[in-house]
Image (cartoon, rainbow, N blue to C red):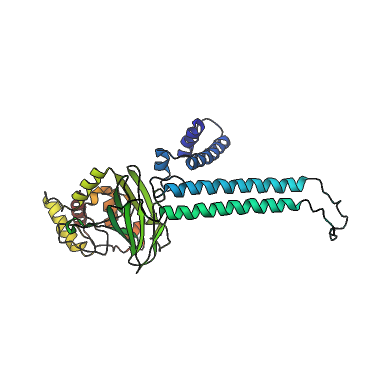
Length: 368
Ligand code: CUA
């Protein structure tokens, strides 16, 4: 661990002199990186989750535990197979020959001793047993995760867009249905049904620490479910190449205590606070005129459905589907020139004056 930390420190500050020779430092960094990678692979601790958010070798919740167990078992079996086969090949090459070597390489001995065949029979039998065992375990895992262990109280509908996620929260009480984007809040310790569809091309819903991938296919509804056994933020990513900005189609699943989740839901249903200043009021007018064709904000006349719903935008950690942190500076930069940040996305370059941009940003900052 000490060495890890030292190596991590060294590699996080490129160019810094630590008194050792450059070569030693390089070697130290390389071994540091390798041991860090091994550390992440073997570790299931919370800090590792934060540092390697896409690590699928750790699972949280009933949906992913059986899958992660199977993954580790198959990984270990595969490594054992490599070790055993490599050992046998080396032993076979090095062992003394039963038949004297011919002086002419084209001559092959016609009679070979037969006792070596036992190796083939034993090897085939062991491989067959392991493969059948792996197949049975795989099928039973598939069956175990095919549906939630108990009825899911929360049902959401995730709709794929190039390149963001529309998220609709379903409810029997129609006044509690609402839409948000890119960040999915769920109650910790409870299964959540996720219905998946797409409006354009095939995307794939993938939150590695909570579940495997399920595709979002235009004209079809797919079903999956997720469960997080503890509160936390679980990063997700579109898992199917869907065009230029596929890599910038991230999402976050935020698991909270059930009570906290319910108050988040209730808060999402509310409209924005009344504009306190003239700038914010001007920002709202400008937002409705310039952005409201594509974006919606509950409680205003902005009701566009082409782009993400921006109600309560300030409760989200990122903007542009996980591309940028949600800070005033990045928000301004994004509105000013979205094509520079995420080329090819559908948000056009708006002809805004500096004052209009500032007013719109202040209106958005009010959406808490
Ligand atoms: Cu959506 Cu890749």
